[in-house]
Length: 211
View (cartoon, one colour):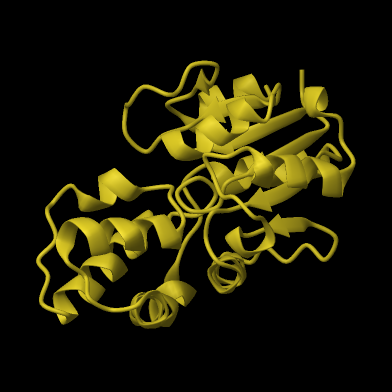
């Protein structure tokens, strides 16, 4: 059955922005003399900027304070964000849900300026659509607060909602919020207990009742 509301994670789920996040992370680290391991992005994907910074500080010796670090990373990221594209198959699902009158919101662990830059890049300009960034909540994913805030702002009962996520961190948040959580990873990895796994846009469509 098609839900009354669908809450989209942004990076990697609606928009193919994870490669740019990785590129920006690597570029910023190398600019301060730190060579990151090849699996660093995979280890921090889906996490908000502050906990990623704490990993870099505690495990890799990053000496910058948080504000200087995030400015360095975002300088690289925002300069290239206009070239971002939607994830293959995602925008078609977004438009089909819109055509059916399904309420949609963006729920991201990214900061507000990244959310706005990304949505502008792919042409998502919905004046009434709610967007929740990491700056809008006390606790980010995997805490359920971001998704519970989306439910509060849209006024849709939890039982009538679905969450779209590509990271384990985000899917954990959706499950913890008590929402139907569709885990659509970029790679074939296992999702958290309670999530519905889809490995293609067609499988996502079936789980959303769009076929």
